[in-house]
Length: 501
Image (cartoon, rainbow, N blue to C red; front, top):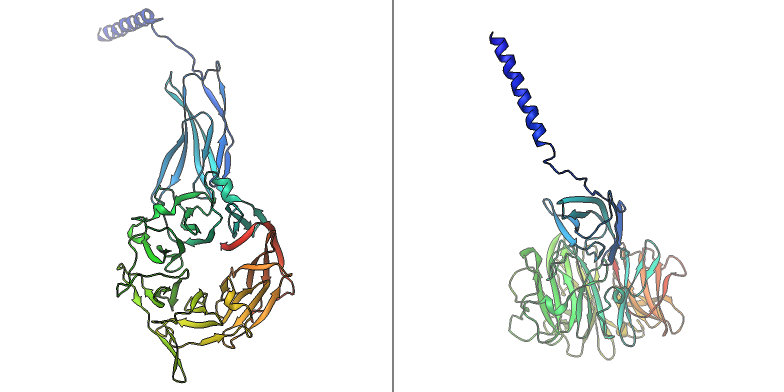
């Protein structure tokens, strides 16, 4: 009896359920989704600092209708702990400048949302950012009405002409360009938040300067933006850091020394340093940076050409210079005094030498001669010499050379004398001809790109075009081959070449 009742109840419930379903028939409206398919490549590539253009092809399951769609282009950028998604554009077609670090591949998504249904369709890609501008040489060129930067890539043996003007058409570099510095370090953020990937590169003119991204030559900031308080005079001279890869920077502007301590969170140059006696300083356009002895940082060396004396400053937070003392005495006569250099002497070079940057060769000149004295670390300073009076007969053209470079581990200085590259032997106080270019082709810049001192690159200008040459050296500093290798030509008037690893 109980089983009969149970089965009857189940049957009745089933009938009611069927009836309910029958009554509901037709109450729901079903429609097919107009699904969207996205056709894009798996990988898109762009030169760092250039504009990437991507146009997706959209296909629809039912009918083509883009009236109520929205779009997002999203890149995923790695951070120290995770990653952050950045929306680069909300346009259908992508056309944006890409500034992320080169040599990397980033997840890159295109998203299409149907605002009628709320459904989002996604296509994942990889964004590859490349650069042609390392390793090799920045070539700073001077023209009649402007300056520019080109690059010679040593890996691909390729010249990229006028890269600055192409990337920055709105910025015209005045023809009074003076220098370019590129400094690697542990990290840096420009005032606009753009990351420069562990490098600060600046190009200077007589009254202007720009921070540029070495990977593209794109301008990151005007030098005026780099000071906590803008100086009255903009006359940038030198950019350096305390030691290789160190994140404390030194900038000499209008003879005053400014510092930026990245390791303390600073992103701008602070107040200028001052002399211990309060006198107005006027530092020369040379700096002895990165000096260390047996792994110990010894400080930076400056020459004050207003007061004709040397200063030093360790990486301390105070802004007072340390006066550098030291004399060189021979036969009872004081030939050199670091605290009071002869008023007629002009500092024209400060090439470093020694494996580990533990000495600098100071090159001075007056109307008649050049003078070379060595500053050595480990407490020796200027006292140990040697000190040399360099005559024009012994070292032709040395006092008028535009460039001086010293190899690590050899007591030598390479310098230019018109169309000649000459090699000065600091111990013998004589020079010899290393190589002579054709008459009229003047040597304007020299670089020793490798620490072993066995490679030399020279830039020349013959009145109509500039050129780059590579020399291989032997352990004595002389040429291995009789003739150099012509690397590239058809540059403008070369002001300087700078090697970038």
